[in-house]
Image 1 (cartoon, rainbow, N blue to C red):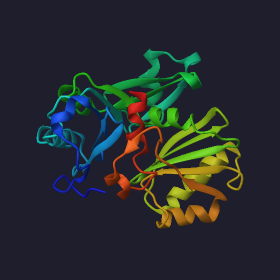
Image 2: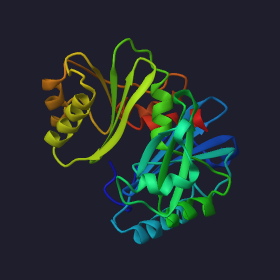
Image 3: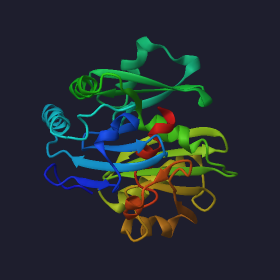
Length: 283
C-alpha cells in the first residue's frame, strides 16, 4: 500500500490516456486514512488506472486539507469524465429497517453507538427493506462536492452489501472486508442479511476475536459458516493463517467478472479493492 502522499501507489495501463477522459468513469473511495480512485474505460469496460494516496494526518481538518491538495495537484482528476461516483468508507453507520425509519431520528440513532460527524447521509437497500445511515465530516464531503459537483455518493457498506447479495450461497456466509486496521463483517443466511458491523483492530488476535464474536452473537459455528475474505489480506499473512486455524471453510473473494481489468492490475490480489471496483455497478 502507499506509505504517504509523496509515494502514492499507481497502476496505469499502457493505453490509458487523459485525452479520452470523456469516455471514462471515475470511481473514488475516501476514508479517514486514504483517498483512492480507479478509472474504467466505458468503451471496452476495462479498468485502466488506479491511484492510492494515504493521508499523513489523523486530524479531520488536516485530512480535508490533504484531500484538497491531492485532488488539486492531480493531473488525471482535472479532466472531465463521462460519469463519477464516490464511496465513503469506514465512517459511523447503522442499518435501520424501513418499517421503523424516521429521518428525524437519524442523528439520535447514530449517536447511540459512536461519535458522529456533521453530515448525515442515507442509502436505500431495497432488497433488504432497509436504509443505511452514515455520517461523514462536512469538510470532507464539501471538498468532494466542490471538485466533483455531479458525483453520486454511497457508503462503501451499501456497495458491498449489494454485491454480496449477488453471490450464490446455500449456507450461512460471512463476508469479511479488511482495510488496514478495520474490518467490516457482513453475514447472510441465504438471501437474508442478518449481521453487519465494523470493528477496529490492532493485532491478528483482535481480528480473529471479532470474527468469532460475531458468530457467537448469531449462535453460528465456525465449522459450519463459510467465510469469504476481501480487502487488505492475502494467503501468506499471519492474520489469514490464524483465521484458517479456527475456521473450517475459508476462502478469498474474487473480482466481479462482468468487468475487465488491464493486465497491469495482475499485481493486485483478486480480493483487494472489491468495493472500489464494484462501485460502477451501483453508480
